[in-house]
Length: 138
Image (cartoon, rainbow, N blue to C red):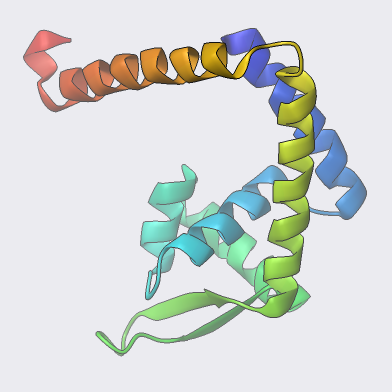
């Protein structure tokens, strides 16, 4: 699994390098799209980076015109982030690249086998997440 993940990640990184975008930036754009009225701290946790790194990612994304930042409607002290059409276009190209890579990787695998793999992984993740919430079981 690790080799597969690293291989797919490497292909996507190579593709995105040609676009002038890092995978961290793509992850940021994805998180911004999927969560509304979200703070930089929340984005940092979702993207598995430090708050300092997130500020750097947000600064570049804002400078490139991929995101807009504004005061939260819930809390005026918090800046929230939303995707611009330019950010949506960057994210869509990354998602298209990922779909092409996945299609290539899974080309000779039957759909029923892919579904079985997904179900098996869901079971494992559910167990893993349960163990994380109960440290005495880990």
